[in-house]
Image (cartoon, rainbow, N blue to C red; front, side, top):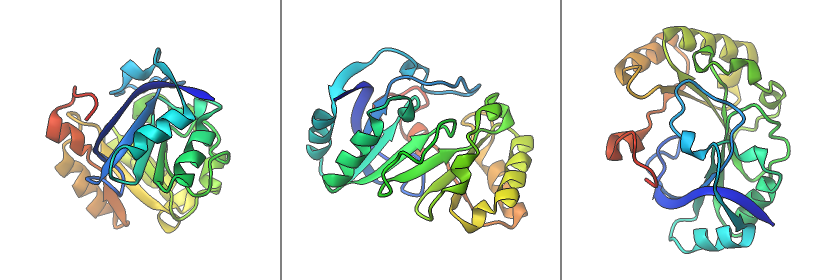
Length: 213
């Protein structure tokens, strides 16, 4: 059982509630969306076939027991749920980053799912699988990547409509180099909601073009 893998590396979590924690990253190849601000276009195609067993072994070679499976869009590959379960079986805290266009019900309940609900500024908001919002668990996270204030206001409507702030941690991620972090912080404070500013700290540490970091 093999997956098409773009890259693996050991680094610090750049986003989510675990930002800053050491983790093993598995970036799978392939994506069904083309977001306007995409910073991983190199993962759209290609990659190397690597088995689930080999990926788990590679993760175990590093000290932390935290693994992130990302993409591209990981759930495009039928073998991804098996990889997630195998990592959990091996004792890892497992996180999955998904673009929210595909059903997440197939994912092992032990996995912390980071669901990216695409704002209009991405150009991909019409691809959201809304059924996912109804099956979120408290350990999951929802992320809104905002390209401008209009995106943030749209996110607020979605948060209120689905009561997301009462279900999960809600992350607000300003597009790097486009929305100043201080502006996003002010929007969050003005909203009065328990939202969390989600900066891509890996870009501040190693630069926006760095790979394997």
